[in-house]
Image 1 (tube, rainbow, N blue to C red):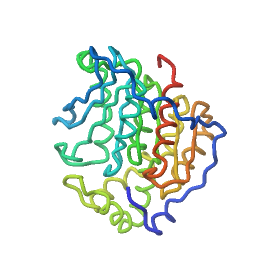
Image 2 (cartoon, helix red, strand yellow):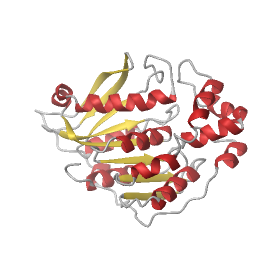
Image 3 (cartoon, rainbow, N blue to C red):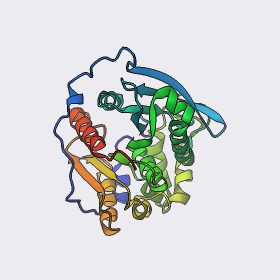
Length: 298
């Protein structure tokens, strides 16, 4: 996502508190140290095509070295996803995790037309791909140890997916955007919403700012962080947020989780931009330390 207009920011700003629970920023070894080579089971990059909605979307699996099975992160990109977070994916792999990074229908060359609702369907398909026994054997996935990491729009996909899937180990939201709040703007000021979305669709197929706003408007309440928060109270979750145009979205989610009685979520804030441009090593440290703290089973 790009910076919201003043009208958009004013329309969707919400108040939020802060959790006292934090996660370590201490750089883990994977930030600066390569794993020992394993000639029998080397690290590798595999191109995959994942069935969803009658098509096969494109993606890659970063396979960690060693015989496995490896705990696995499913990485969700943003809108449109210009920050791919592949440096984060590489660091996660150095820490011994596989990473699946795939593209939603209608984005970044994946077939089909782009739709927000399909992002959630595709997320379920990505998880089904990792849990498929044949794929688990081929790529060394451990289907019992799966975590989600999502940036911007991908943070919303992460929240909705984690709320619906109790078997995940945990989830990380990075500078997440609240699609429900954007839907509220689309209802109140459809022109401002369409203008913003029109600037965020350069890799998306068969959409305009107007059609995207029209899809979001009817889901303003259902797709909001306020609505999903009660379903996340029993989930292990880390909310990372930054000094950007969706800062208030994360603050609102933290407040909603606290109000709902959530006890398993962690938070961390950094004074950086939406892409964490000057805090990439900090981001990698936060995510890896969180992943390594997760239990061996759901």
